[in-house]
Image 1: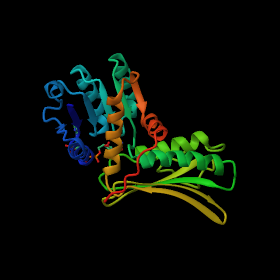
Image 2: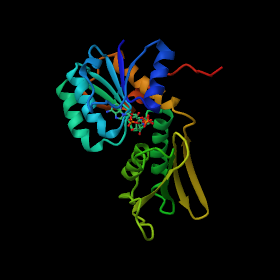
Image 3: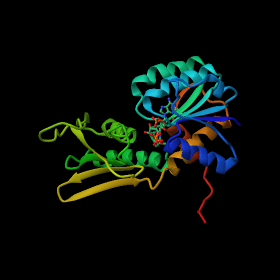
Image 4: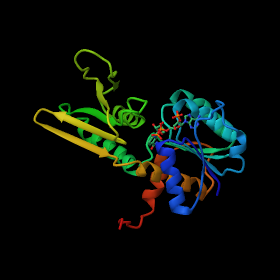
Length: 257
Ligand SMILES: NC(=O)c1ccc[n+]([C@@H]2O[C@H](COP(=O)([O-])OP(=O)(O)OC[C@H]3O[C@@H](n4cnc5c(N)ncnc54)[C@H](OP(=O)(O)O)[C@@H]3O)[C@@H](O)[C@H]2O)c1
């Protein structure tokens, strides 16, 4: 199987190493192109592309891969929401398929479902006020993270009284109709997300901390397996669909030695 990875940074390298260790695949890893644009030659005969680059590059990367005949994509890069309609249209036009997620950690995607359930339980109780806190390494460009945005989207969608998130730079007292989000950029941590519900006298906190990037790479590889396993309908699929399929088939217990 021929695989290419856009992005030679932390995540792209981690995915490349995982594919090598798991199945001996040596993907082509493409970093920032010196000329401003990748050559289609590097993508000829490629079965699947991972994107782990930068948000501003995703549209060009996908267009180029489509023009080279690639029809399967796992897009892990965040911060390309403005380009999503154009990318989705291009993928559909080519009868191609992409799995997209702001966070490919299976643990985080189950965490999303726990948060959905917590909002359903705590949301109707007026004394519990939800909030989001996320912490990533100092070099992370986007704030809040794509994962924090997804958590906020889900909280607002399920909450009876919240209509949006408070602007990060908003002054003044908190608006009770908005969810407060706090962003930390410091050090080297690969990602921590916390959702809390605070009431007079008690606080519930749900927190997921990544120790390294292996969970992101493993989830992205699982999405690739899902794409290769059988034909999928053209367009963009959320990683949730892959997680649904994983949950439907009990997994063997794998305890590291
Ligand atoms: N979905 C998930 O599970 C998940 C998990 C972790 C990270 N992410 C996202 O994945 C992306 C990469 O994260 P990271 O931690 O690996 O960042 P990173 O270490 O900064 O790596 C990104 C790499 O992409 C390169 N690049 C820039 N333009 C490119 C282009 N046109 N084609 C190919 N490569 C290009 C960059 O080169 P230069 O240094 O020269 O710019 C850099 O080496 C970010 O958007 C991040 O938010 C997603």
